[in-house]
Length: 204
Image (cartoon, rainbow, N blue to C red; front, side):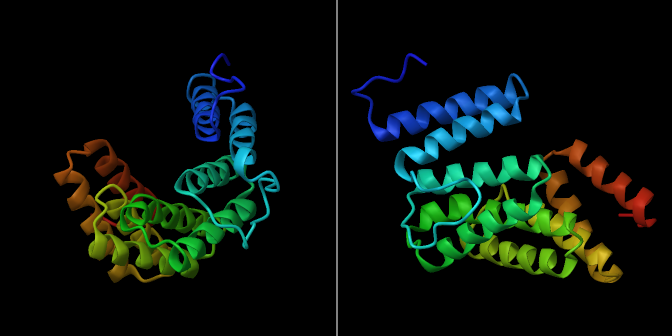
């Protein structure tokens, strides 16, 4: 880690640890090492953060929100879904109540909602998953986020299926497929249509 020197700024050190996290996760598939680098990065500016419990009285920078969200994702990958949900619910509430920077909110908020809708669904909390996905879609429509938008619509469909709301589910799933087709994401379209057919006997 030759990027660490006594003259390195906090921001540069955080960025360096995040690069190490990406390398550990993507190149070596080492989730534990990736978490270690994320914790080193966040504790540069939030030394009291233990990686699990929200610090609700602290102000957060964009970089800190990004790192904490990444920590939540690592917890989810380790099947610690309740910890992941707790952290991203903290970020969700923080961004709703304290973040006024429109670009910052548009960049991160929809993906945090997407994560939460996925994790609530994995915990069989389908009503909560649908509520979160609805919030995400409404935000994307109002402020624009084409990356998260079709994923959130897909989660609306999945949650609706699980809740037995088949007509709504078909509507949402068809919308998601249409958008992914427009984006030329045919692998995703094939996955969705096959999943619907095999799991729920729904033709999209």
